[in-house]
Image (cartoon, rainbow, N blue to C red; front, side, top):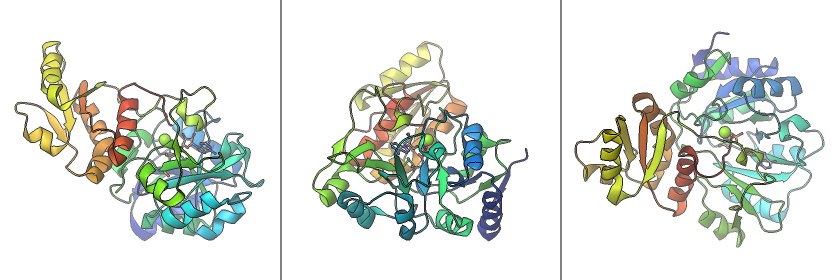
Length: 329
Ligand code: TXA
Ligand code: MG
């Protein structure tokens, strides 16, 4: 299968045509690129799992272009869900609600709940609107790879697996949406992201983070390995990142450091990739930096960016890439 990359109005029209004929299409969002199909077309949804090489018990997020669509996709919207919709949609959040009966169970991996997300990216919005149906989509990476945040990174994974990649440039947020389960007695963050726990707390007055060991997975993706570069990857503290770098060289590796600009400025004689200076920049650049590092080095040393707010969301992904913790797919 030939994979075409298109931009602009032409891309949206061709994407909508493919979706309506039961095919899958890669499209940009503000978080990461998605691999979409008509959420009501079981055969089309099966093609998503096939293209990604993903286990089909791992549910997909349903993407919409207007809040009016939510009512037909869920059984009910409780007050917590409504507050999150009002405060953060459209934007980098996925809200888990009880599913409506008409959503095929292949979309929700057999669960009685569904994750709803309304991207704020203008190309995503125009694309979903043009399709005329809700779009089921996971991140557009091959299962266990890092989520792609630009069309080139998508192509690296999806070449020959999809007919069309809609190119919307670099993703502005850069890590996957925050997932909040509103069906638990206290709303629960299943995956941290650009909408932080602090932001949710200020709107809901309560929220908990899922931190336990994954036995029965709440977000089934949690039980799968993910985000892994093929190179070795470790996390280092600011004060011993240079030592770790020298140690790796002595062992015969070709190491590279991923860090924020300020730390890089304090180091010399190193190979590095800068993720920028602000929290938003770090989040925006982390995945693309890991992919870049993976191409040129066999030993990635990533700075520990800390636990606060968006940096905490970034570290959630970095730890998974370094092989610690459970994973989202
Ligand atoms: O930002 C994002 O969320 C991106 C873009 C494309 O929208 N999508 C994304 O999808 O990251 P995916 O499939 O890679 O990750 C979705 C995660 C999976 O871990 C899945 O298990 C979980 O969401 N999930 C989906 N539906 C769920 C549900 N009903 N209950 C619990 N977890 C769910
Ligand atoms: Mg994913």
